Image 1 (spheres, rainbow, N blue to C red):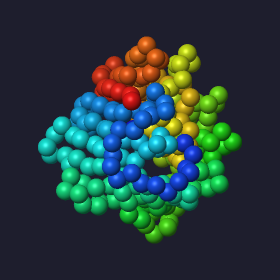
Image 2: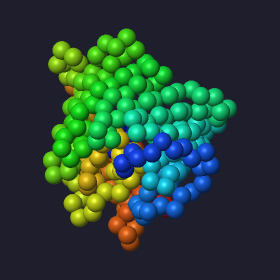
Image 3: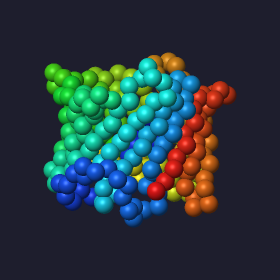
Length: 250
C-alpha cells in the first residue's frame, strides 16, 4: 500500500491560479524535487512516473508509463487556485477519465475533497504541524463508510488506522525503524503536493499491516546518493523481495 509510505508519497503554498500548458522541465529551486520514479514490482508490474513542476515547485503534470501493453498509460494534469486544487486524469487516447477536486482551508491544506468523478468524498483534519491526522470518507450517496486516523511522533507517522462508522476495525499500518540520520526526500512536499499535508520527516524502514486477523510485515531498505537523497528503495514482504523503487531528481 503506497498511502503514507512514499507518500507515499504521498505527500508548498498555494499562491496563484496559473496552469502551465507547456510541460517543460522547470528551473527547480530545490535539489530534492523528484523528476522520475521507477517502480519494479512483482505484484503490480513495472512502471515509470515522470513529474513536472511549475515555478513554485508544485506538480502540474504526472505521467505514468507501464512496461506492459496490457495496462493503459495515463497522465494527470493539476491546476491550482487560491481556493482549490483540481486533478484531471487522461488516458492514453487523451480522454478525460477522472477528476479530483481538493478544497483548501486557510492553511492551504485540503479541507475536503470530491474525488473519482464524485463517487468518493472526504473531510480532513490536521495537527498544528500540518500532518493529516483524521479523515472521514464518504461514498457517492454521501454515506460515511470509513474513518481514518493517523498518529505522528517527532514529525514521523507511527500508525494509520481505518474503522467503520460504528467503530469496527477495518485495517491498520504501523511504522517504525526510522532513519533518523537523514531527512527523507520522499515526503509529500518534495512531490509538490503540500495541500495533502506533511509526510514523515524521516524514512521508515519497517511497517506492519493488519487486515482482519492477517498480519503482514514489510521491510524497506533505502540507498542514498552523496547529497543524502534517496535514490533507491527495496521492499520485502517478510523474507521475499516485493518491489524496487528508483528515484531521480532535478
